[in-house]
Image (cartoon, rainbow, N blue to C red):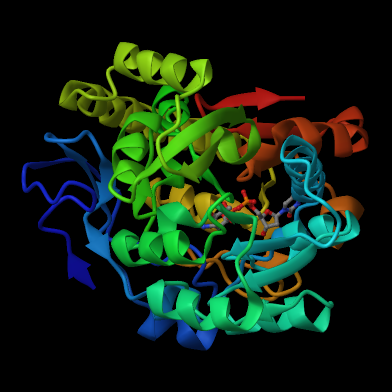
Length: 408
Ligand code: DWN
């Protein structure tokens, strides 16, 4: 693990640590009981750069440890199929992509997004560092190179596969430590008339909705439009469009092209709102930390009170963010009997840190709990709809973010 001494973007050294969530295990490090004694806990500090306003994690954990055998499969979440289908349709339409155009996805995971592009007649290529997930994608017919992306790999791939019209990177750009090498690769590989499209959790939403459980070691950077615009300029690229999307608690889809381009009104509007929200001020993050402490006490009080009343409580969705929430609030098997999750890889394992068992949904439906702590609050709308029968029969959801409340 490396401790950050200068800002990942501007290399400034005036970093303000505004919250510590650790020591805490990696949020996707699900484990067997025999692995508990060797479990590793890391410090987890979020910092604000007083020079350029970039928010970032101060601890850099070796990506091989985090991603070599990865527990997160995009396709396990039905709402992500819907999201990526609409993303692929929007991009094909927006850029009038002829059939057979090459679309590349970096951090392509199990190929869920690329399958949607393939269904629309595009040629697709994934670049995915996690061996197990890349294998799954290849087994399912999505051509995927099992590598970490960077300048060297871009040169190798380009010589073999040509230059893509579109390169996407969804929930990846924030995971990259060596952004300079990554962007060198993007600039080299992208067709000169091409567009680089990233989706990253939006810092404005994280602050507004106190989404502290999305702060973890995989997410090294927390982006706003303003620092991103500064960053891309270093490669002679510019943001041509930004869209706000609902997924993962509030995301921005950023379209970047080579050369100078007039920013759209949306870009200027979002930057204005970021300044209004105070994203460029340390005070904003100090207040954020206070709200996080308040959520923790409220949630712990609520759960203990329900438990004292004899309630049966389970976790719903063994997400990375859920593991941060449970560890930071010290919520364990004394409160949560198990966590139900759709990902086969996670079932039968224990969640990191609190060692709560992860099951499928059989027991959730055969012996419904009184309460389900929604650890995937980012899918609340879809889940409340999907579980309407559970609610009709008296089941209730505890939604922890942005303020703990009971739904149902
Ligand atoms: O950036 C990342 C985001 C995109 O995904 C990664 N660093 C890791 C991951 O974060 P997460 O685990 O918090 O992602 P989700 O998509 O909020 O949670 C997915 C988990 O929820 C999966 O384990 C599947 C589960 N799930 C479920 O059990 N029932 C999901 C849905 C929609 C459901 O109905």
